[in-house]
Image (cartoon, rainbow over all chains, first blue to last red; front, side, top):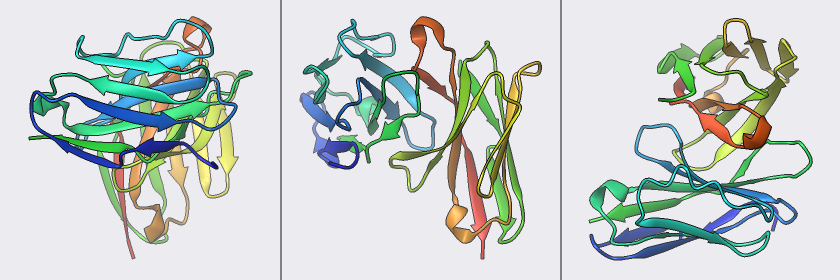
Amino acid sequence: GAGVSQSPSNKVTEKGKDVELRCDPISGHTALYWYRQRLGQGLEFLIYFQGNSAPDKSGLPSDRFSAERTGESVSTLTIQRTQQEDSAVYLCASSLPGGRSEQFFGPGTRLTVL
Amino acid sequence: SQQGEEDPQALSIQEGENATMNCSYKTSINNLQWYRQNSGRGLVHLILIRSNEREKHSGRLRVTLDTSKKSSSLLITASRAADTASYFCATDVGGTSYGKLTFGQGTILTVHP
């Protein structure tokens, strides 16, 4: 596809349930990022995958959050035992290798935890 | 704390006027980028300025960077209603963290027709 895609676009879940969010980056982009954006706030870095290197997980807020990436393609962000404070838009971005760090964003997944 | 802090938090202007947004950051950077976000969804990259550059233009956008003051500004000239959006600066500190961006809280720009 032409851009970064994310699914689902909206997810409503009950507190305590697990959710899985998916990101399809632009083909050829070795770097992939997950961010969280609470209403009216800036972007909060969660995790960063770069090629075959170990991911930078320094932004994950708790051990309920985890993410995986298959090679240089799809990534999934999993939130276990969701809490109401997890409600936010989760944004995925990817970028080119070779010294260019402009990030291309997907439309995001709006997660609502009831 | 955020690496980038935008100022003002909100800006309201009339169509045709210029809009200036500022960003301050704390640590040395490799580059600084500006992004636009419409309707709280995906961000769109506007412009990247490297640490050895002082000014950059793209269409109606002008970005300046002052590394001695650790600050940047984004100027939108002859604004249009379609420029209404949130604008974020993001810093890349380079090194082993190259490519990893730290975003500020954003400036909400409203352009009235």
